[in-house]
Length: 351
Image 1: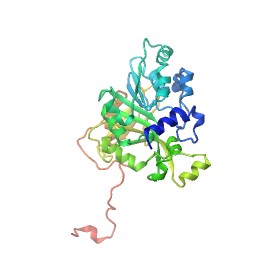
Image 2: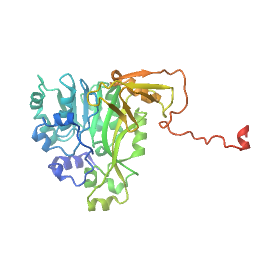
Image 3: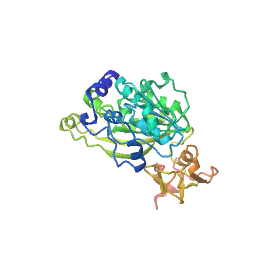
Image 4: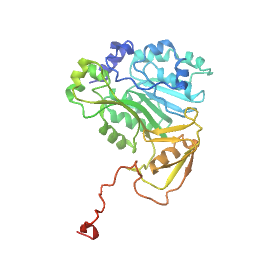
């Protein structure tokens, strides 16, 4: 597979989302009201050239500097531009001229639609595997997003490494993509339709998590996931028993996160001050934090909240003085079975 094949698929083969042969490029769930408001202001030409559905938009974006990888016609860039406000800035990167032409043609339109004095967007042509070759300064982005794009990259680890370098300390990569339940056979990777449909380029999920850790994202957090139903008999026959999942992850750039979730007796209290989620803040699939309630957390979660843009929205309880072992229901399980009642071998050394 090559960049040229992907460019051809998204620049010529597809003319609209209706041309997609599977539902792999779609994110599930209803669009929240605050996102519907900004999406309603997106130009029709931009929407017509958007190949997918859903919107990758984490909470607390006001004033943020955001990078969208694989920005296409600019739909997500412009939606995010409406969410970050006039003081924020959103940058899109894409490799397809046809898509970039649509995106760039509507910068002034969207600035006026959102009531801004000037556009708070910019677009660059380039490969997401080579972010270091673009005029983007390292350590300057609060958030990096992508919507079903990582699977299309030729060198996925290079994408993650580039994203890590561009993020500020405490910044996050928040993105949705497709994952497989096993490593992809080589003969499927070379299928242009399967690759363009976001299937045969999908990473085995365990390889992805290990890859993220290698580049510095030491504790990947799964936010949500759903099993993909391809709903195309011909493509289903090609992929056979391979299972696919659409998943949203958040990866924080925080040095020194521990490999497991460790218990230091810490807790947080969510103040309820993020406009989009006044009652409950969702960090990930296992951390839904109700406003006003003391919520015990592991050391990694404590740091993710305390050293990111979310810090102002929480009260923090505890310190690092005492370690209590693995955090219950979060840090995995001890490899040891523990003593068995009546087992003499547990009463002393047997070396």
